[in-house]
Figure 1 (cartoon, rainbow, N blue to C red):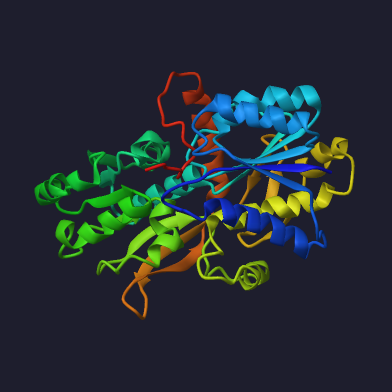
Figure 2: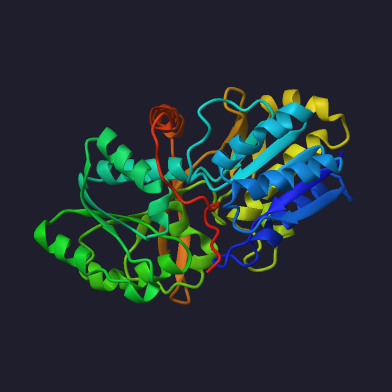
Amino acid sequence: MNISLLIPRSVLYPTMGFDIVDGIKESLKKAGVEDPRLTIHNIGVAAREQDVFASCEQALMNGTDIVVAYINPSTAEYVHGLFAASDKILLVLDSGMHFLPQNKLSNAFFISMEGMLCCRETASIAVKSGFTHNIFTCSFYDAGYRGPLSFSNALENNGGQVSFNHVTALKRSEFTVEPIKEQIALREGQGILAAFCGDMAMDFYGSLGEINPDGKAAVFGSPFMIEEVWLDKIPYPGQKITAVSSWARSLKNSENEEFKQILSKPGKANVFSVIAWEAGILLSYVISGPVESVIDSWSSCEFNSPRGHVRMNPDTHYLESPVYQCEVTESENGFCKLEVVSEISSANEEREQLLKEIKTYGDQTTNSWHNAYPCLES
């Protein structure tokens, strides 16, 4: 079976493409597939649907059976007709920061980091911890994705609210937290919900001592606020940050230990190589068979992953993963360290609520960045 990989790039994660390719290859190798036929195409930041369409079309014309692509679900909808018409398969890798398609795509499957679900769970934790009024702050970049909407909706669903919204400036040189400081002074007992990634997250962490010097306002973050490639570089701000993620290096399961042992180079075991590893597991099930067998094989599969036990939802073609409450604490060298607190027990209920909201908002015209999150060119 011939497989093509559509790999993006990002200045925030320069090795992102390599991590995805290595995750797939090492997973296949573990499954006994030593020399898979992989063709690799770079799709930039995956922002132009027409370019992704052209790459998929060319791959299929060249005899590809399965295309694995790190793209937005909306882009997957745009190109899906090619796969349905040719009886080929699209396997989408995604951050989970965009809406899923409203309806199941017959020839497409999704492996996601569950970003929106993690934001919902984090907001629920904030309210259950007593923070019903919360300041929401995010980068100009994160404001163009669906994390902020998930935070807001989950707060409302749990009896909380956003008391103040703050979006940082586009230019990093214009970053300021003065509006947050002013708002904290106006009302005691507020929480802070934050959505940042990469160097933008680093700037926010660096400002926490200024925003919240006495630590009275609890801080809750989006999943990429606790992404460990960047956390390793960020000095601990003096107060813990709570967030939810679908994976962490410290997760205790045998698959995760083996995954980290195989991808042992510093920083190589990360959220991108994890979902690529899962893609490799799916590919190993079908790589020796006809492409016609893939839909039946994948639609109801489940297996153990570095993220825990995962299962494909046959109604959505969406691989569902456990999610975990985590805390950012201080490492021995004074930098940030991620610790897993517990698995979230309400993930299925929150996931159902998220799917309902996707159907509600899917009928409305909404704007967003087209880049696959977190892909940036500059």
